[in-house]
Amino acid sequence: MAPASLPVVLAVSGASAQPLAERALQLLLEDDQSVEMVTSRGAIGVWQAEMGLRVPSEPDAQERFWRERTGCMTGRLHCHRWNDQAAAIASGSYLTRGMVILPASMGTVGRIASGVALDLIERAADVHLKEARPLVIAPRELPWNLVHLRNLTRLAEAGARIAPPVPAWYHQPTTIGEMVDFLVIRVFDTLGLQLGSLQRWQGPVARAAADEASTP
Image 1 (tube, helix red, strand yellow):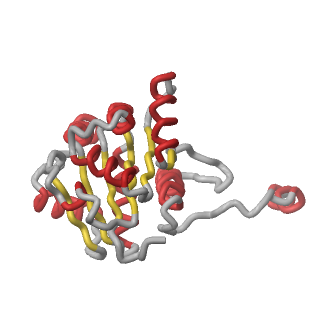
Image 2: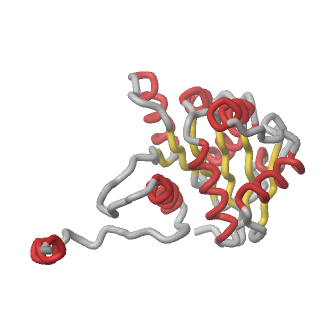
């Protein structure tokens, strides 16, 4: 397994689910991780359209933006311009712990599956596949058509882990924030990172305990 000191590549493509990416960044920084972040041009547009937020495209300004928005000054954060294919993470000689695309649009999925790299996210993903490093893809789309399924299958066959952000209820979430944390933490479990606090499955709830709790 790669040493914990190696950076994690966090890629954010233009799919609805940007709050998952924001929370992932916050948890990574709180865990004192080193993060190489790429926010696609489409993702910047989604932030504006869905959240009314203007995410800067210039790397230094974007780093300040995320630091202020997450309120987290720990860890290391290095943002990249969406089309900077001369960035360090575009080279296989630059070592990383792994890469997570959260959320992953089906356009991004299709291009990576076809070996087409039009931006830095797609190039970095291709690098992780060719170097046999962990690549985790969290596709955000519903439902999946046959093209989506075949593209995801090709990526899985090439070595990627497919981790769609699918919720669960056994941890009995009561807020959207708790649901978001569950989704993000489970995605990063695939890299061997334990981020944040999560009530993990411990077996069925005892009926007697449940009955006792419901007794007035």
